[in-house]
Image 1 (cartoon, rainbow, N blue to C red):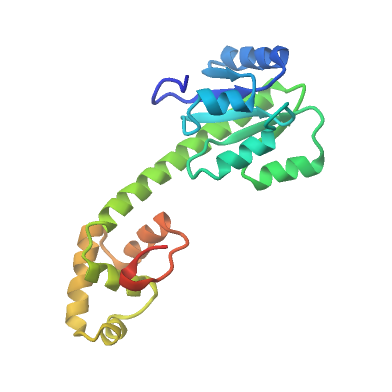
Image 2: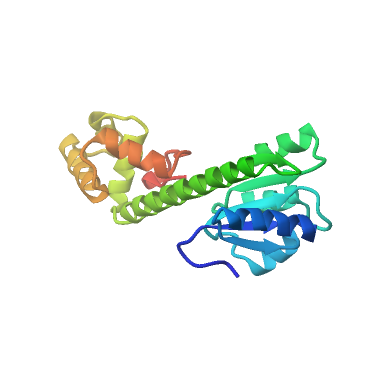
Length: 216
């Protein structure tokens, strides 16, 4: 029930069957692929939360509510973007949803133009996130080819140390540090130290130096 691989879907979750069918019809009329779910629990059981596309989600539902589901999905590093729907939500509820990364918050009855725009933005965010994850995976696979010494030198480079400082820290010659750095750059397929730093930080924004240059 996760949808065809490679095609984005709208995962529509609303316990009100009349509203769900009406919104589903609207979305299909605009050529969106839609998968409908009666509850958050049904979605978690039957759908792939890492599927391609976005989730259009009612805030107030029996059982697991919309915000609760969003928080569960946010805890996953690869969750889809969420567009919330609500007829009665307060400002604080809207703020909480946006704090946890919701793409949009729409009120019922839903304006179809706003709904279509929100879904398109969510699709674009999902695609951007997938491309970023793909780039990060490539970076990590290249990092894995570095020797322990190359990773250690990389860690010092990421900390902003010069070759002379790294050599002193490691108790080796500066030319040896240059060799390790050059080999690391070759394996990472970058042409400059600046590009090396940008590439690693893009995959690991919270990089901190650890022994042997391990990213954290």
